[in-house]
Length: 596
Image 1: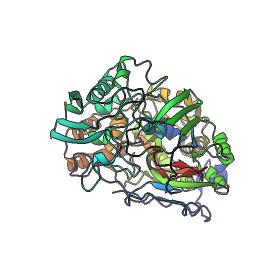
Image 2 (image 1 turned 180 degrees about the horizontal axis):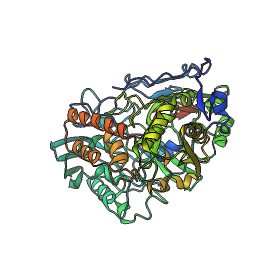
Image 3 (image 1 turned 30 degrees about the horizontal axis):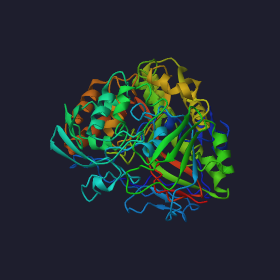
Image 4 (image 1 turned 60 degrees about the vertical axis):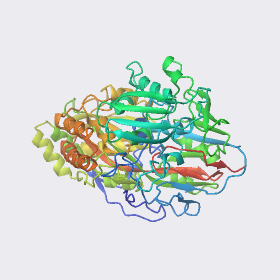
């Protein structure tokens, strides 16, 4: 079960912030806020790099469930201003927040405008791995397995709804043995381009994903699949080459969104210029770096039809422009930074809704480059950062400090205290490492993200105060991701991870196993062996024990500095009705409508 994130402060309540020693002086709230321009884009780095991240997708396994789909619950955080209209979603155990609830009028109409900080990585759901894409993808594509906005997987187990009650493409499934999973598919479904959805679709989808020419960043999550057999038109049999304890969870998210079989015949066409799915909305226009337009699809197979006629996702990289357009009424939904949220709370016709999310933010420390190839140097970095003060000041309290790359939403989470802010301990670690001070390190930051810039400046001062000499490298958002995975980042790279399966396997395997895309520099044979071992058993209790070993080992190795679990602040125009905000950023608009 998931506990409530740390308190979300009432923005009207004065708070006392303890000072942080930076550059030989006390850094207070006003000092930190001077370090950058206006705050905006709290989730910008996370949206670019997180994969979950969050970002995205299933729910955490219990000790006895093969499917790995326990109900994840959280007491959502609400501001007093939003309390009258933003309520927990009606399923009862949910972690989503329902904004402006109410029954939709008959018919379909209206236009919704959503702001994105980054362009789509690709329109092809197996060619991307970022939470930014999760904000639109689920409306266009359908997965085999359905997970709702409350993070509940519809698997029919332990009182959860049956698959047929959700919006997944499989009506049911069963393991006939540990290495065979049989899916019964819904009949009569077609893609937006008219192609039928059937068992051949499922076979071709995973064949395309595993084709090296596709270079899918999702492929590593599905290496356990040996083959998919189209047993008959509506029966897809998945044969595994090894046990996979998280497969059902994976299929509810990234990589599980089905694509037409024809896509495998022309991979250059599918994704860059068009993308047909089976969801309630189809893509009618995509202009790179400008917008993605979705329109309600008359042929949608689901038991409920869309109420909004058109959804335009506008790509607006500049923080201040996004806020200005939201306050002017030309953007309906976006995420806000704490200072932006304070400005929006006083505006007419909009509300701000905080919600705890699975995404964890932190710093990746490059173990292949000196001086961060030295564990003692990495531990010194961890001790030098006064995260509580940063949370209270730059993030206005909208975050929870964590010690590992897991949130309370995830299976494998432990409440491990982070490295304590202790400048003297940091200095001692550098002395023990035998490095000459000041120790030169490079710290990457996306230049357009004002929150990331403020945090980087604050952390630079903290690190310099204990014996480092930090050089901040301003990076362009378009190149940040590619440089990181190529191993061309700095010693310190800000990073966000959405933990999309809500299971430690995805997080640790992606980020810590030797040679993985999101792990350009770290290699530890003991970590690799434990990660391989947990992937080989359906015994969830055993997997939990392995998670504890990994948590302790990785914490001691200090390969990263995990900073905080995010609390996102959603800005919503009051004309947007019956909008269920999920913790995992996957916005699903089927039941929402626009008030004229």
